[in-house]
Length: 351
Image 1 (cartoon, rainbow, N blue to C red):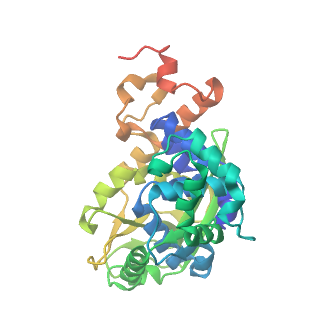
Image 2: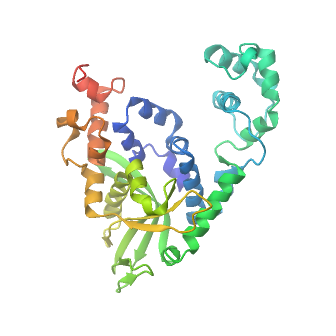
Image 3: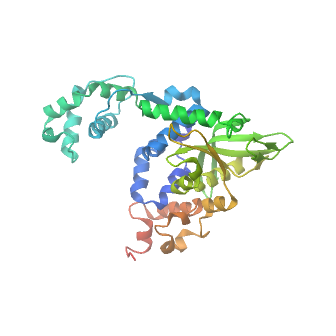
């Protein structure tokens, strides 16, 4: 499902959230693609992606992740390798030595302000020699194209967080409950083709309400969107994590999609199941979003069109919901993507 989802040109909530963060992030998102962009945001997103996979689609682990357990080259060396793989459109079907890419290396050194080679900068022979010191990693990168690379520490954190979520008494019975995993939903909303990939949907298709060990209840004939999260904050500070990443926008968007798809069920408020990215944290928490949080995620704190009050909304991200993000997206569609929407609306005048 994930490959089909990421190949779809439909608009996702993660793209919409970039509407209020500026053209730089919008263009970076479009260049990298949704999955790679999201994974580039922080180490937590890589770890979270691994935990998601372990819990919801463990059968795809080897297709999504690969382990490098040796010393890594510098970021500047990896940057050159990634440039060559992208420019030459290499796949993992055939592996090529670095000597095959003299033109590409020279072009990179000529076109990019680059300090990673020190005195060898701009000299092909010296640059190639420095790159060849890491040729085993170059071969590894070619073989791992399209996969997320994990070191042993990241893998240990993923395994620990997965174990905490699946086996702790706070959440064990939630993960044992009837569900659908990695649910891809799509909809035409306000004239825009949108999509969402939901980690898990809990399904109570019985005539009885169900109460979990922690006291959380899901009604009869209902579905509940459940999102698996890990982050740098301790579990008791999950609300800080939510605010930093605007999880209210994400889950309000997902609930809107769920209501359009599961029409025979009552759709409850969504859940976040969260633990910290740390092998020293041994418990999770469950957070049910409130009506106020869902309303803010959809309509923003002001509940009005961002296009009519953009002075107040500028640089105050908490006031944006996905409805305002759609307003901005439509503005860009009508007026072009080369000038920031706020600047364009005010004819270049900045307060």
